[in-house]
Image (cartoon, rainbow, N blue to C red):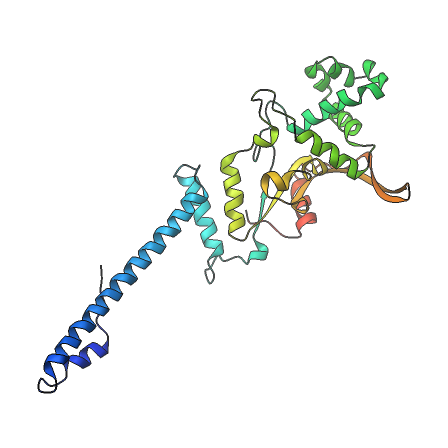
Length: 288
């Protein structure tokens, strides 16, 4: 432990003539030196404690991450962009981080979660659509033959989505999603889909948020499907969700204004369309 040279007032006591209260002066000198030493020791311990707290805070922030290159790169990146006066400092308003959802924040195997929602909706709506018994992809789905139902590729998938996600108001659809997500479970684990999240990624979301970042979801999934539950599960509010969407139309129903969901795709927020969606939604370029 390094103790710096004592302040000038200590040497002032030492220079006093011995005939001028020498004994008192000597005692005062010893007391002053003891005080300086105590102050230096206390300061050193305080600095060490603060450093230990800082390291512990990082460790606690990402507890499920192994100590390695990945964790180190996250911590070092956040430290660089949040250090005021540093060459890589980024103002809080510009700290935008974007995350995919399926396969990144929560599971997507054996099927994307939204597809399970669509399948359950087909079963629920089937009594209102007797023609589905002889029409693909609905006929195969109702027979439990998922492979044949999805053999039609993107066309079949789009038809399923439009049949199950449109025809109601935005408020009605939001409630349908909330009711379903509250009880829907993964077919293999038996856990709620909202529990099928990746803990390390939840920790990253919290860590970035604590350091002034604004986190966005940018997914190929439906924006109206995700918004009802992302804030509760990820701490990401609806306005920070970017995804695929369908058209809506303004109407007056029973004297009340509503937005009705139409079976027409506006944007499929996937691949090259993701950066476009980020720009339109946030107006800022993400740094993470």
